[in-house]
Every structure is written in C-alpha cells, then in structure tokens.
Length: 254
Figure 1 (cartoon, rainbow, N blue to C red):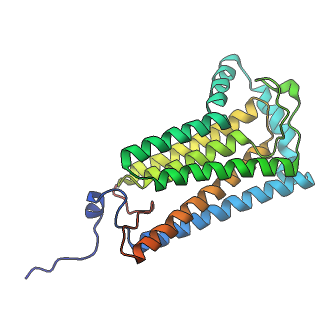
Figure 2: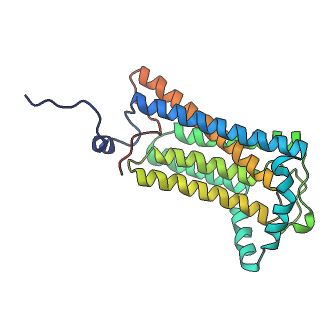
Figure 3: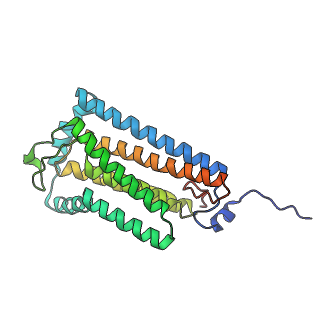
C-alpha cells in the first residue's frame, strides 16, 4: 500500500483556510520573531531616550539633520507632505484603525484580531502621552513649522508612533491571511516604506527632531512585538486545548 506522508507540504498549507492549523514550528517562529521585534524596538527607544537625556550620540545630529531637511523644501513636496501629515495624524489614524477593525470583523467574522489592532493603538496612544510628559522635550523652532503652531512636547512623535503601530500590526494581521511569500514580503515592505515616509514627513514639516521619530519607531516595534507575542500565546493556548491555533507566522508558498 502506498505510504502517505503526514508532513504538511507547502501546497497543502496554501490550500488551508488562512488562519487555521498552525504547527508547533510556526508558533515557535512567531514567538521568536515577536520577542526579537520587541527587544530591537526596546533597544532603539532607550538608546534615543538616553541620547536625548544626555545630549550625546544621535542627539548631536538633531540640529544638522533638521537644518538639512528644511533646506530641501519645495512647494510641491510641501503640499504633498501637508496632506500626508493630515492623513496620518493621531486622530485620523485612530479613525482609520477603527474602520479597518470594523471591516475586518464583518468580513472575516473575527473579533480577536480587530481587538488586537485597536488594543495596540490604544497602548501606543497612552505610551506617547506618558513619554512626552516624562521627557518634556521642546520642538524645533516654531519658525520652521509648516502647519501652524503646536505647543505639545516633541519626544516621541505621535504621528510616527501611531502610524507605525497601525502599519506593523496590520501587516502582521494581513500576512496571516495569505499563503504567498511574495505577498507577505510585499506587505511588510509596504509597512516599512509607510513608516519611513511618515517619519521623514515629520522632519520635513519641522515639528520633530531625528531622535523623536527614531524613538517612535522603536516604541512602535515594541508595541507590535507585544501584540504578536500575545497573539502567539493565545494560539498556543488554543492549540493545547484542541482548537485552531491561528497565528500569523504560517508557512508561505512562493
């Protein structure tokens, strides 16, 4: 009798529903990646925090980078970034996240992942306010602001933090829904480009220093890492109880 392999092949995995039946290896991979993202983000944030507190390291580049970016301004680019900044403001990003979560819940009949996204956004908002008031850093000169006055503190960038968390967690959720490695890489690449774009936008419009946006990216990676870790722990618990372990680190087909 012909022996049938019990090992899950890539084609077989690609044919499964997008959020079902992950292996122990997938769970381990998710936990490792999420922990790595959290640690990397944590290191970046605290490095920027220390640099700003001591005015050493990359903080020494804040003024030169600010001046260099301001010198690059042009009418067309300014108009583009002004619109982009409005679309990526903390309020606009929160509304986008809420609508995304609603659509996902209705379309996928899944409330866990929308809750994960909204919970991550809420955590980012709290962290932003706590750190801003803890550091109390002033913004660059208001003479360089291109969208009116802003008296709030500079460190970290709320625009960059909120948008980065939204893009990272959304990329994780979406990558769990596809079986193609190319699509997964494209999803994460798009998130990375979006994060860099909003960070540069905040520098260009004159509202933040380099270390502000880098700290925000670090915090965002930490929050996304926690979200992925929580999702992985939930999947592990469900697997032990004989339920579908729906994690985002599934095997992918090219």
